Structures are given as C-alpha cells and as structure tokens.
Image (tube, rainbow, N blue to C red; front, top):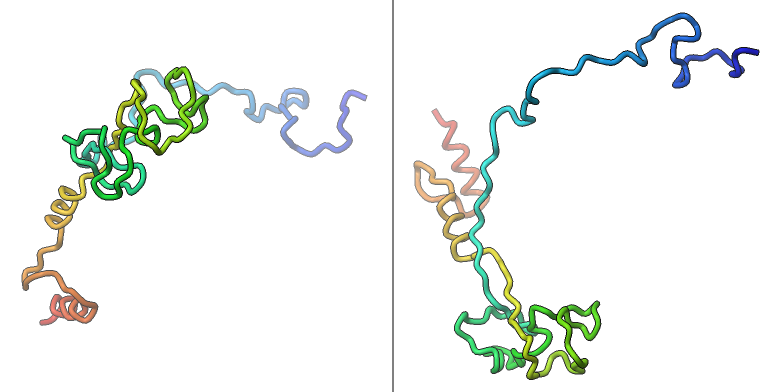
Amino acid sequence: MDDDRKYRQNGYQDRGFDRGGDRGFDRERPKPQGPRPSIDITGPRLPRMVQTVTASRCYNCATTLPSDIDFTGNCPKCNAALHCCKQCAHFEPSTRFQCLKPIPERIAYKDRANLCQLFSPQVTVARDAARESASTSMRAPILPNGPAPKSASDARAAFDNLFKK
C-alpha cells in the first residue's frame, strides 16, 4: 500500500509531487531586492508633546509638595512625617526589609519618621494641568457668530444657523 491515507481528499499533507501535479505549495517566491519600503507611506508621525512636571507628593494625602520643602519635617496638609520609608524612592514592599537598598536592620514602622541615611524623596512625573488647560482652551472652536454654545439648545440653534438661506 503506497498511500497510507484512507481517503484521497486534498489537505495540508498533499504536496502535489507524489501524484504528478505541482500545486505550488513548495515553490519559493522571488524575494524583492533593495531596501524595504516603510510601512507608513505618509511619513513619520509627530509625537504629541505632553507638558510634564516633576514633583514630590505626600504618600498619605497625595498633596504636591513644594520643591523647596525640607523632608525632615511634616506634610503641610495632613501632618504626616516626610522622612519615612513610605516617602522614600527605595521603598518596595516586595523586597527584603521592604527596601531596595541593603539596610542592616528592618525599620518596623514605615510611616513614622526615621534616621535612615539612604533616604531619597520619591519624585513623580505627571502632566502639567495648568499648561494642559491653557492648551485646551486654545483649541476651543471659535465660531464666526461668537463664543461656543453652552447648552444643547444653543448648539442646535448654531447648527440650524449654518444652513439657513
């Protein structure tokens, strides 16, 4: 029995060579020569430049701390200690002693002030809300008749005014 399959249906095991027909399964396509064209034909997309600001925030109330604050004191809003493990950039709950730096002994209370020499305040990067609101106000539509509509009926009236004759 030279054919081990029970039925003679075409399928993924057919190569076409054993039955005399070449169906093109194993033909190699000629590879194009030269540099590959870029996927985006229109050119590179310009990145959206988001204005960011770096600031420290209180671990307890998330208040933005002033840049000239002394981290030996307390938070001006909630009075939480600022020189503590939870405010440190090296604080990681999943590591040994919950610190990324090699400290000799565990600090038991992470939210109380301590005298750790490896302390560095955690700094976050966020969008600058003041600049963002200014840029969105610049993008508000300026209608020839006046300011943008404030309610649905004003919007409908402005739309109807566009198509009046």
